[in-house]
Each structure stands twice: as structure tokens, then as C-alpha cells.
Image (cartoon, rainbow, N blue to C red; front, top):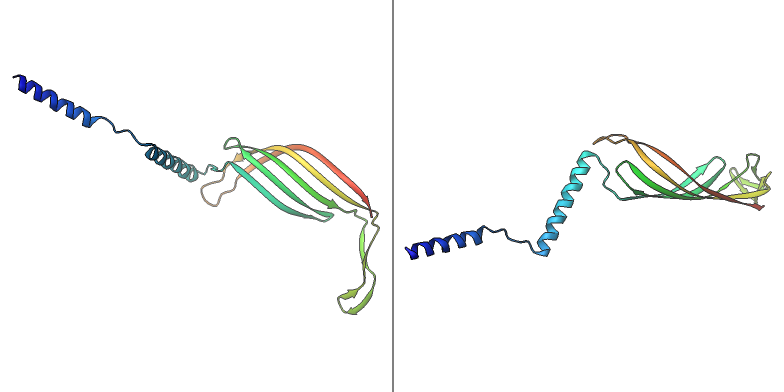
Length: 164
């Protein structure tokens, strides 16, 4: 009888040890977390949600009265709100300036000589720094959609007027 009880206790203890959950090693735990994070990103991408943390834009701007270069950087706070800051540097010209070429015509379309800008008195260079937010109004559909957002902000502008 004591042997039977001892055998049952031994059998139950072996079953209990084998039924316990195996603990994951640090490497397996990191793999599981990474797999879960990738699955969440795939799910967000399928739903059309933005999956980036930052955005950056560099551009060259050509206007009828000048040119400029700009850089904009944004950091996503939520899916619908992004904090932005931007820098812009450029040159503007006056509407009365007119470029004339004074020289000899060698061939049709080829003129030798220095161009002269009639009416130019100064060079106007500007620099802008700004901060703002971008809010997503309507999200983009899964495919071939358009996102509508509102951008608002303010900042500081400085300019240099250099004699020609």
C-alpha cells in the first residue's frame, strides 16, 4: 500500500514538473518581441496608419521673382499630429529688374559680352525659421488614396539687402 501511494506521488510529481511552463531565454524573448513588433507594423500598414516616427523634406524652390532652398523636419506625436520645424534661404528680385545682354552677335542665339540687369539696385537675401504642426484631416485609403492635412505655424524671418 505504501509502495502504491509512493508510486502515485512520484508519478504526480513527474507530471507536474513536465506540465510547468518553460521559461524563455533572453535571446528567445528578444526574438518574440521583435516578431510581435513586426506583426504590429504590418497590421498598421494594412490599416493605412502611418508607421514612421520622423519625416524630412529637402527642396529647391523657383519662383517668378527668385529662388530658394528649404529643409523641413517633422516628428510624429500621434497618428494625426506631427510637430514640424523648417529652414529656408533664398533670394528675391524686384519686378522692375530686366536682364539685358550688351555685346556682339556672333551666330544667331550666341552673344558675346556681359549681361547687365537694368533697374537692379540691391540683392535681397532672406532666411526663415519656423515651427508648427501638421494635423491629418482625412487619412489615405489602402491603395490610390489621398491624405488631406492642415499645416499651421509661425516663425522668424530675417533679410539682408546688399548693394549691387
